[in-house]
Image 1 (cartoon, rainbow, N blue to C red):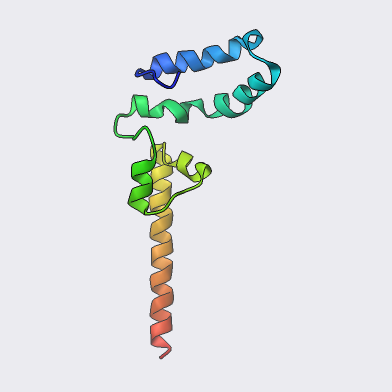
Image 2 (image 1 turned 180 degrees about the vertical axis):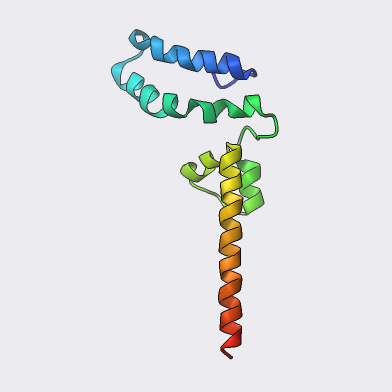
Length: 106
């Protein structure tokens, strides 16, 4: 499934998992339904937009730290990356303000 190279082919295959309920054990089907189906577009979006890396290793190197899966997942969408950049900018500005206030108090 994850070796496919076409977005629409992968999307069709993932959606097909929903309809093949009888082929899976109940526990496995629940995992598919709860965790994969709800986020499948973020798993395969790199096939649609070639600028997005298949893995997050390069992203982790750029930010120089290993991130939890929940944070990694946000970097697989354009919105998630822009949100992260915006937040880092806000934090940077806030730190600069604090440094200026701290320096003026001397």
